[in-house]
Image (cartoon, rainbow, N blue to C red; front, side, top):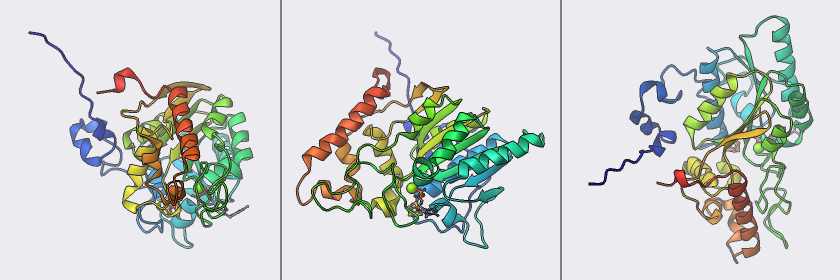
Length: 336
Ligand SMILES: Cc1ncc(C[n+]2csc(CCOP(=O)(O)OP(=O)(O)O)c2C)c(N)n1
Ligand code: SF4
Ligand SMILES: [Mg+2]
């Protein structure tokens, strides 16, 4: 008789809350614990199915657990700031500061410096902003924060556009995507520009202690990365992929599915880097064609109707294939 063993992997434990029941208590997510902080709580005005609201809740609750509740958050202008703090109300259950659209990293650096001066090393600082606040207007302040290695975790919630002001294009908007400023008309409908700024890799070029990407589709992974980041000192950066049902024109119930398809198609690579070197990447279980991801969203509808745009579909597939190669996302041991 031939005896063989196969390691069983519970992939669903990473995604669905119900999957937590398959895990020991200490391995369950922060979100499944009734002791979580609820860092951003009910009453906010995010759209139904907003990926950014979910991402912020997951990240900040994990950071609060990792620091015994000692977090000060600094927020850039954007949806997260606007929907959570309509004056005089707030949904934040932690000290929280908003200044301007472009200076969250600089304000956070100042808060960290003041805490250091007071000898309050137990209190940790998180800066957070959207892709516009991070990859465009806040980029110089962010690079300065990295270069000085200030003791701040910066989190970018990437919904690939200026959503708060009506879905304009940012430098994180993918090629061909329709936005209010890149309409689906003309010879190159949608965003006519290239691949956008790859801020996680730009952050790596600063050789800061920690850089990671994550999505709202994998709660365990996201929480682990925030926890790891909070165990370190110096400048850290996490880039979280957060679908936006309003701007991307996908069903509100599909936020998690859209994020998962972005990962499984290779469109959004999930990895970690320390001091400028990639140390881990999350393998793809089953590569899906990029089309399967694009078809979930109205912002790419013009690639399929009234006629199929094979040239641009191939270009988008090529970007995903390149990611898969660059980050070694398809590996023998990942297949079951
Ligand atoms: C200097 C300045 N320019 C423009 C604005 C208007 N503004 C506020 S939020 C925003 C877009 C934010 O986009 P992003 O950072 O991606 O966050 P999102 O709303 O998509 O989460 C813009 C253009 C502003 N507040 N300040
Ligand atoms: S526009 Fe998008 S990011 Fe803003 S609240 Fe709505 S779903 Fe969230
Ligand atoms: Mg945005």
